[in-house]
Image (cartoon, rainbow, N blue to C red; front, top):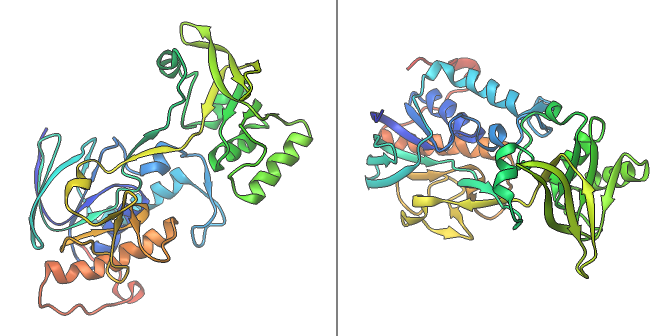
Length: 337
């Protein structure tokens, strides 16, 4: 059902950084609404690796992605921000202090400022060019995201790719599944420590390394996978017994209609002023992995910092001419809205 919402700030993207923006805005007594193309909050953390531990969140030596999202939801609960999920923003009109956004569900959002926290945009996996792939995707024999590690217990799992996702999941699954890793070369693009752990696990016989090979074909019936065929660049082939194929070839990034708003872009990322997180369009701010500037790090904790800076700058857009008297949360508490 289409909705009409009036708010101080429209936040496009409900990943961890978008969720934390609700908190930072709420602490300044600014209202907000969350809009996301996914049907649940959490962005990539919820959709791609809910059980994967994250190690660089302050005060958490390790925290699963799903738990981080759950804790952020509890943190923003007092601010009661509406959520428009399963919607993509299709239009933006107006000027700073008086924007109108529309969604593909027919919603209308009137906001004084906008925060783009879209991560990598509307994302999807880069699929391998294999015959019959849709049937195996439909049955779950080919998966691009591991939602539940335990679901792969006892399975013959072939992992294809040479980046962090491929290496991390090979290490995470080696104790519960029979794992083979397919890569076209011996060198991996993963974190050096993880790559070293993979080599050590392979030396112990815990993981089978299929190098230098690449995916060539899938074999099975009615969506049930029996084997993954791989080939060298010289055309030599072999078949790997398999119940599940996990191809980790990265994500395709699509900013969608946002790319047509006239924002300054650099390699599909939004250029911002790092002091305020404002884009080239006054009143529109951007935070998180979608942005670029000198010194930008694609870390959740830096996105959290950007959310705080954007909130401070947005206060002046929502309340022009009104001085902001910054107070620490330890003395201010959590205000009600």
